Length: 383
Ligand code: PMP
Ligand code: GLN
Image 1 (cartoon, rainbow, N blue to C red):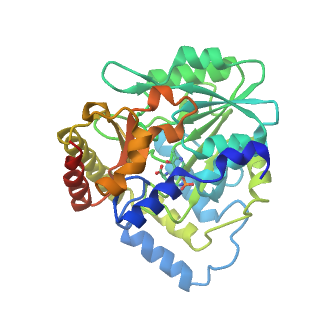
Image 2 (image 1 turned 60 degrees about the horizontal axis):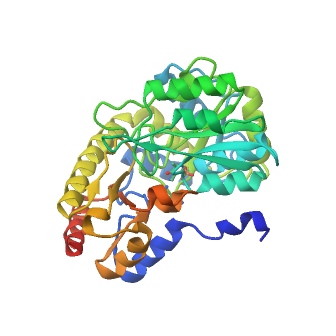
Image 3 (image 1 turned 135 degrees about the vertical axis):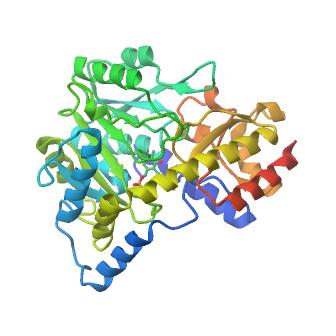
């Protein structure tokens, strides 16, 4: 393996899930739901499978899916031409990697907000660019917010792009209108491309609202908006994602994407098109159910002795292990499956700067209530 990719030989999700399986631990590490998506979507996939849709879809994706993605984007007031401004990808992961490979060069800098979804660092490294990491800052209320002064300070003459993930994995922060407006202003002022990761766009709780960065002034033309079906429709294994942007930026992303996978998920694409058009009521139910699960797990973790941080979206809640007498959440995470039979992910797995994050564990609450309850019962043994 070439030296610049040597830090990326494994992922925390693969390792922690393997450990959870080996120890028969309740797996609140890797974020995936343990129930299926809407029946109408599964029926549509079956129909496509048995309906002769098993060959290569068109390079940019099946037209009905591109049209459905365009219609879905109008909920935010954003218009995209399905023929030139939308590209279907193998999940958000491929979309982000393809965008970086297409748009940045060795010597360029890409701003990444820490903690970051693990594929970002690997994808920036594949592109040969350098990541400039700016940490979220914790407020008095425990919410993690973007460090706007830090972002400004990190921008230099070689900065080409910024990766923005909201709702944010692992903290559950949903960036506010003011925070996004400030990030947008920086992008416009310094002529940056924004690559947004909006895979949790529907999974926001309480009064939080997902606002695409592309809706802010000057951003439609410089944002590569990325999302996917996995989190919205409980089908993380399908890996159907998409990019919405200008014809020029979409053409650039397509240039790299077509030589990585060309296409994927042929019969799943019409099913996701169906889901985007007809299953948003189901998604409203999912969102309400996840909000209750967030509350259930947060309360249980607090009872078990953790100091729980607020989460306004995603599948995740972060918890401070220090009140239980532990100093190092990474060390605890590797011990937890064997010791009490629960798996969680140390937030440090998503950071360059271990110090500020070393006391936090990330727990996934996208599980059946009885699974969450069993995890909580087991975690009480820590006290
Ligand atoms: N971005 C974030 C923030 C994620 O949590 C995940 C994990 N599911 C992904 C991207 C990957 O999305 P996909 O499975 O569509 O590639
Ligand atoms: N997105 C999921 C998480 O953050 C895991 C995805 C993966 O396993 N690569 O837990």
